Amino acid sequence: MAGSTLTSRLRAEASGVWERILTHPFVVELYEGRLSLERFKFYVVQDYNFLVGMMRAFSLLASRADYETARLALEIAYADATIEMDNYVKLLGELGLSLKYVIKAEPAPTNVAYTSFIVSTCATGSPLECLVSTLPCFWSYLEIAERHKDKLEANPTELYRRWAEVYLSSEYRGLVERLRTAADKLWSTHGGDYEGLRRIFLTASRYEYMFWDMAYKMEAWPV
Image 1 (tube, rainbow, N blue to C red):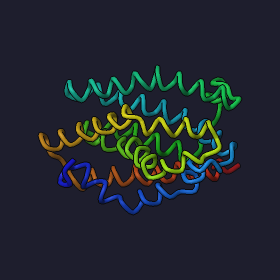
Image 2: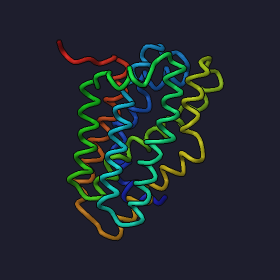
Image 3: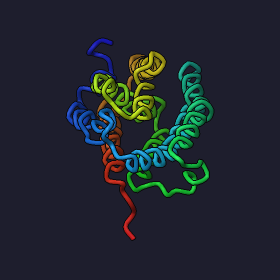
Image 4: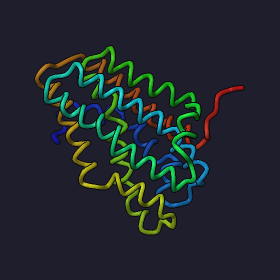
């Protein structure tokens, strides 16, 4: 994509925090196979709440967007509720966890804040604002995988390798490109408040960093 597109501009604006995401200890240790299983379990448990939040966000987007954007949003919401959830349950089984346990687990403070930010943005903002709020999650996972893919060959933890390889697939790359294209098209046809979009993208990017940090520190609520 050309450097003049909305998504390219937003990515450049957030380069500082994205570099911190790409080099976070959780990410590096996971791709090298050194991450403790307890930290990975914590991440997976927290990811359930976030997955449900994303499903709701894209459902909200679909109810307000044009047909083309709504169709993409519904595809993602449906995949989250079916394919992604099925894969999630399988991963839980490999970790010795049950879906019943995960549903009862309390979301960590950062998780609550990030999920609430995305859902509220999609409930009250424009379709473009909604897309921009979700982009850092999808897009950064692709960049993480590309940055660290060479580490996977020597990664001794098969579970981590299989988890990471999902984000190197052509299907996942295609999804990120479709989301970027949808956002760029809405911007080129309808325009909008660039400063507002920049703030949304930066906030979501910061939450992405904080989510990894939350998982690494196994963040808990104060008692």
